[in-house]
Length: 218
Length: 218
DNA sequence: GCGTAACCTTACGCACGAGTAGGTAAGCTC
DNA sequence: GAGCTTACCTACTCGTGCGTAAGGTTACGC
Image 1 (cartoon, rainbow over the protein chains, first blue to last red):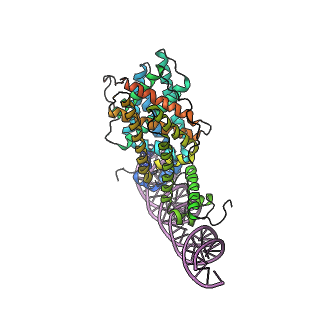
Image 2: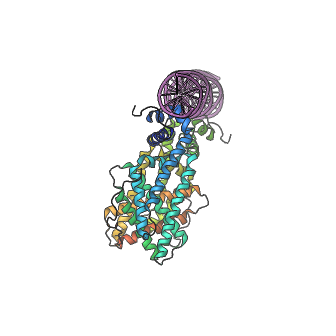
Image 3: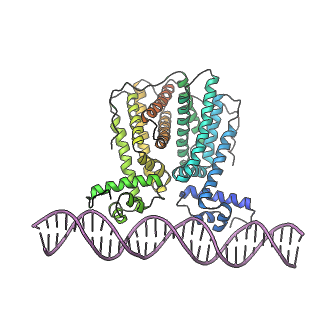
């Protein structure tokens, strides 16, 4: 019994969320049992129901807390009035540091919420907020250097960057001894060179139709 | 009753797999019930057990079939002896076409297998095979143009490209009216410009430590 | 020091779904 | 058309885990 008895509600709620994130992350949403979560929190099951509601609500609460923390970490790191690349760099670094330090939270956010129907929407919303932020950074950053990039290209750029970062983060979550800052550097490098070439007008175009459109194999 | 009675085993098995992929993709592994799958296949539950075994085995079978199809689609499209960018282009195009045409299969492969513990490993193996292929293409392609890129950079490039493509494909699966070929073009563009800059020696480096390493916010 | 409200428990109801037992019938082979 | 094999079904068992009812115990106001 690591916990003294009869803690105030606010404290217990956080403990429960901590436990829930841990268990959800190691078992997955369905395989996680409310009993195990209660146990992990050093409390009995009805308390969880009294405070956080049903299993779905509990998971949503986890999602919210972890998502908010992630967002705050990133937004807090991206100081305005810094040059473009510096801002992007800090955002990426904060992101990978967060994932490195909160592997459980990331597993909940990314691996679980993605698969389970009822939560996918919520997750997608957060995701698109991030993409918007990144697209905005690219936009103003490139504009500040006197370059124009088509909106579609900029969006794809942002989307691809976020997607690549998510995959990289996913990998990071499984490799405890990997260095988040190094990961961020590599990602930055990727984005930077990509953006650099784009604005230099290096556009790749598909070759003229050498083969007819063949329906994909059944 | 769309099915005439008493079909030969091989046919029924495929029907069951079709049904399973459909149901798994719309419900998720846990939420999918064997009854629903049997129902979708127009058959009764014990048949499924007789032919494909337990729920896990059934899912693994789906995973295998869809994964194999995807691999075949890609490998079949990447004709050797074509120039580097053409090969990459065809591979990407085949990939996005496949996802566009097999959204259910993709959902099973990507969203479900990823989250559920017992299958993540299998999926990761496929994934790394693809990454290897891509890295190889980048390697020989760049070497053929007389450029050298450090192995780590090339791997990150491949990893990021695959990650970005997966995210893009994920998005594609949710947007039925999006055009796979256009997606492939954008991805290609992204990769191409990135690779182009890399080999031009445009490496981005982190700024000198202006701020000490601050632990991420709890 | 006593009420009462907040905290916490044990012990259950109940539904749902994986997996199975045991049986029917259709098509083959001779 | 006897007898075997293969396809297929109805109707269960049984574990598991969500959610709750009903009751204890501690702290704190007054």
